[in-house]
Amino acid sequence: MLEKLSKWKSSLSSQEIKDELDQANIPKHIAIIMDGNGRWAKNKGLPRIAGHREGMKVVNKVVQKANDLGVEVLTLYAFSTENWKRPKTEVDYLMKLPERFLNNELPKLMEENVKVRLMGSIEELPEHTKKAVLKAVRETENNTGLILNFALNYGSRFELMNAIKKIAKQVEMGTLTPEELNESILEKNMMTAELRDPDLLIRTSGEIRLSNFMLWQVAYSEFWFTDVLWPDFNEKHLTEAIAVYQKRARRYGGV
Ligand code: IPE
Ligand code: IPE
Ligand code: MG
Image 1: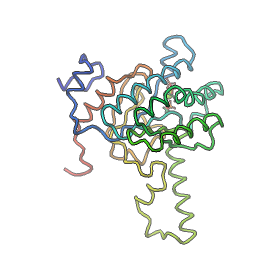
Image 2 (image 1 turned 30 degrees about the horizontal axis):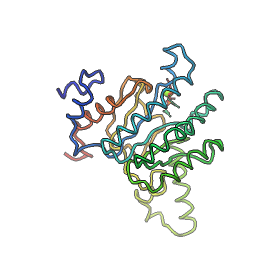
Image 3 (image 1 turned 90 degrees about the vertical axis):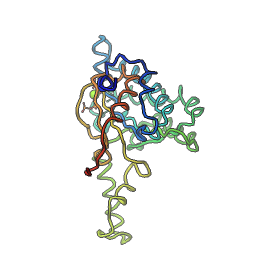
Image 4 (image 1 turned 90 degrees about the horizontal axis):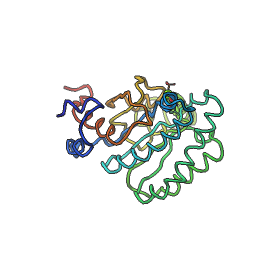
């Protein structure tokens, strides 16, 4: 039965897969590169934005499922620092999605005790997007359930450069010496400060690359790739990814 779990086209029902999961070994931090919206739309003869709209609906389901399973942190790559290269109409649409999602879902996120968190250059977002996401962060601030970490205008190289600049300033001011600098100090200056590293990284749509996502933090993450396009992704795929994760031996360089 477990062999079947390594393929996404498993014939198992979600209840059966859930029964297969070891509740004591649920990845605490799952990060997802939600990819394939454009191709999903193209396959259906629809404009790319139709794929983004459909993809937004999947976010709901995945958040709910991750919360049910007891995942502590769910990081979702929603917009990269490179995605500004896309046509303006597409970027404009993508910038409307966070507020649309949060307008619909914030009451439910509150009910489910989800804490919204952001990772990325929020200052550069359009005012309406910034306002919506910061409101969600503020309103869910005291929630203690799943941390829903949206990577919005996020780029890993920018994040690292930014952390290095902050550290260089501290050295310049004399509050830190180069000898004192260590991994933990670097991490405290990154956008994931206080978050544990992802245990499981998922990318949809068949692309086998990181696209500037959490380069430092995924050093020892387990990767799971699927050909499924993000709008077709569902709770069952998430559970399958976790089942595969649970079969991996994480050695961290040891034996
Ligand atoms: C992922 O889907 C969403 C974002 C990157 C914002 P894409 O829009 O990249 O879809 P494809 O890769 O073109 O199919
Ligand atoms: C990565 O997907 C960014 C997000 C999912 C938000 P892209 O579609 O932008 O990545 P590339 O261009 O295929 O590498
Ligand atoms: Mg893509």
